[in-house]
Length: 151
Image 1: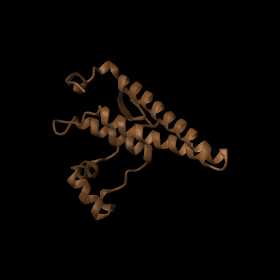
Image 2: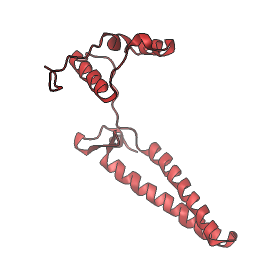
Image 3: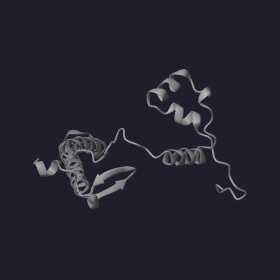
Image 4: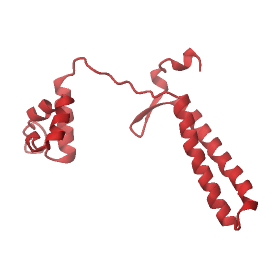
């Protein structure tokens, strides 16, 4: 890989797939590598096992296992070739309204968030280490209007 491959890709080439960020070019290459390696594994194993196994059905089953092994192998190859596109940002100022919105959304999806006093000590300790304990302890849901909307 050259230095241009390690540069951050242009924003227009990034897409979100299954909650993760991917570069379209790398995605296309990953698909091609996956298809090529897994299909080659299946076809080679199918040909080799055709004469070595007693029944054709068993040969096809083992060949499919070889194809699945090719999928795993291609996943490892693509993980080595294409670096993740995530940007993890630590520190800096975070808008407190954004945190309130996230907690309100979480409460809306899962109901009442409960109390941090009810947490097991290990969970409370981990939340304090992640600096989330005070945030959840201070959270109070906004009162809803008669139609379920915030006033």
